[in-house]
Image (cartoon, rainbow, N blue to C red; front, side, top):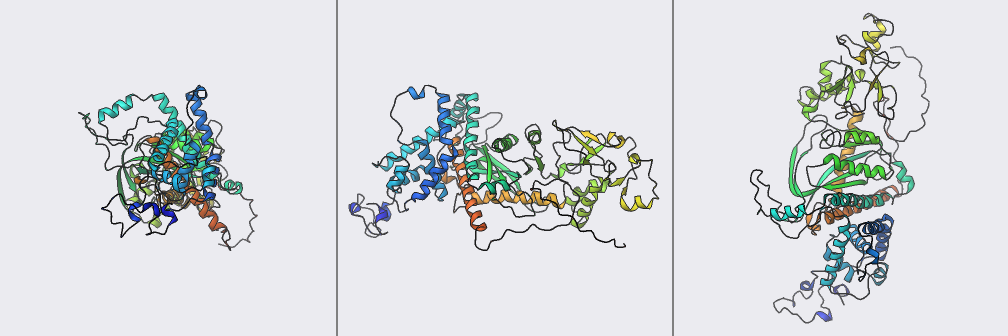
Amino acid sequence: MSTLDVPFGCRPAEMTTDPNPLVADDLFPSLFRLPIHGGPTLRGKAPDGLITDMIGFIDRSGIVEQLNQWRLQDDPDRKQKGGRPHKMDDRTLLVLLMTLIVCGEPPLISRMAELVNGRLSSNARQLLQIQTSRIGSFAQYHRIRRAMLRLTSVFDSAPGSVGYRPTRAQFEAIQAGRDPQQCAQRQIRADWVSNQLLETTFQLLPAQTRAEWAGNLCIDGTPVAVWGKRGSPVPDPKKPNPDDRLSPESDAGWYHREADHRDALDGRGRRSSKSAWAFDAHLTVMAPNDPTVKPDFPMLVLGIAMDKPSGRIGENAMITIQSIVDRGHPRGTLVGDRAYLPNSRVEKLQIPLKALGYTTAFDYREDQLGKQDHYSGAIQVEGNWFCPSMPQPLIDATIDHRKNTIDDTTYAKRIEQRTKYLFRPKAKPDAAGYVPMRCPAAGPSATVNCPLKAPKGPVALTTPTARTTKTMILNPPADPGTCCTNSESTTFPPDVGIKYGQTLQYGTQRWHQLYSTARNTIEGFNAFVKDSAYEDLGNPGRRRIRGYARQFLIVAASVAAANIRKIRTFFVETQAPGHEPKAPRTRRSRRPETVFTAKAKPATPAKLKPDVPA
């Protein structure tokens, strides 16, 4: 009999003998006999239906089969070797891990041992192929721990982690003993396993719901603190002390990132800084197709990477994006904070993103505002190409707004006036990424009149039509570039202005809606997965096992469990009685600053209105 079989406060028969006479068992007969490592527990049985679902989830992911293939690659003679089969296999361990996290419990090895020893029905034990004869809690704990180490050794890119505080010299010896080629291969495996858990949650959605998403994404990094009182001391660059005691999780690092909570347009608000010994989890979440319409799908995390903080930001972003692309998902617009865009090195993030077919939307620091680049006479201002004759107050609009020298209304008017000077693509980019761009004075949709581009000579300034319908260029450049002298368009190479370039016109209402909605989505998910009542990802006490691979696996499983919770909430809300999908919001017609990735709908013919005198 376990404590589950008796009311709380009543003494089971086998507990009548107290080995510790100092325990006040007359007052609290059961309290002092609660479990420590996987023994009898007051927590209830795990439902058979949940165990069955978690088995199906792990089987659908294909992770167990892939692990076995990798083991054969590492040791082709593995099947010919003898030895007793393991009592705890990969499939069972992953099911136990996901079961605990989905139920909001800490994924500790002691909890897994408790689950196996006292909280599984005979049917569930049979489904998991666990032997019917129970073993002691201590032995079960170490059996599961060995299974965890065995599973993660296949994709452990940082082997040799110890469970104590090594000296700096000891850790440097551990690092020197690692094979760089093997570590790189295992990192690819770790990324695959973690992202496959997330892909399996996405595949839980019906095909119709999955098809609604058009490919917009938002990426952000969040610190994942490790268990321990303190991290490693920062070494003296001139004379590092080899006897310094480092953190047991020595592959982590100090997370120092200034969180910018200011509004993207006006720069106002508060700043805060974070500091922790942690890993940096890079999460890529689905974003709405159109920020003005409530999406018909839940916003799930589809990509994850984990690394030491403040390093390889562009590379880790591309790990998540490339994984999403490799799984056959659509490609849309990627939104990121300034750490990713535009501050990553272009060869690490911007160029690969453009090659994959993604557009971008992001914000700038104060020193990145205004004029950023030029090509063939055109100037790049805050990510977009404009006429070189655009007035200086329009070029400096965001700079003045951040300095509070102009108000919001004036800023909005100046951004709207910028649109008249905006270059427009004449055609889609070719296979190599070259795109022909028209200056605002060229083509049938010209928005300005320029003496350098008049089809039949200079336009007279006294022409009433020219003055009232189009902006006049009064200060054409004295030494015009080809964008001014070419009659139709100028071809822009794919790498010109790529660091700061983005498709949407910066500062417009559409840009602000897309950027803010996507950023709120990822920030909301970070808070969602760190909810202390559920996955509690921000609590390092739930991840006490040492080693990068073990930490990465538990973090990915926690994000997958948060995805499942998102899916449950989505269906509860959408299938509730009386629920009706929200109709798209109506908005006034605008010039096409960009093409949203929302699904195209057949255009309805506009109703012609009779001419009304002005």
